[in-house]
Amino acid sequence: MNIARHELQINCRGRGCYNITHDVSAWLATTGVRDGLLNLFVRHTSCSLMVQENADPDVLADMERFLSRLVPDGDPAFLHRSEGADDMPAHIRMALTQVSLTLPIASGRLALGVWQGVYLYEHRYEPMLRRVWLQAIGQ
Image (cartoon, rainbow, N blue to C red):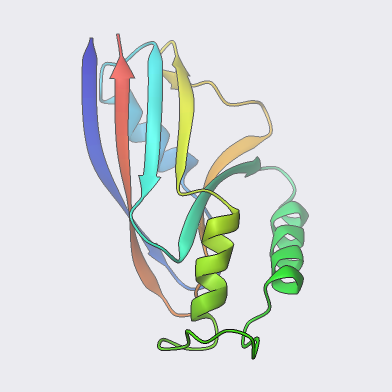
């Protein structure tokens, strides 16, 4: 049984989806894990992780449009605004999405579907350095 750990750092330029599939796959290739599971965990409360369509950028734009309608910035109902109008909406967006993903590893590669990619979804407008903890477990 092999266990490998790594912290991936992502420089986000602001709100949006950042495809991290290549970075995750490149690290996985160095671990020696051929078959098993990869867990990703984002160590923040105002961004999230998701597996999503990686071919048509309209999918990601539609995700943002949907969440912007569902959780609008500056909603007067929110009390928490210490870091700006996008602060509390970012926390709610994170709660509605995921902070952790578990993906299968097969033959040393992520067993994603043809049109799937792994994304860090930044919910804040300001540039942020985000950290994602990766842990591969398997043989």
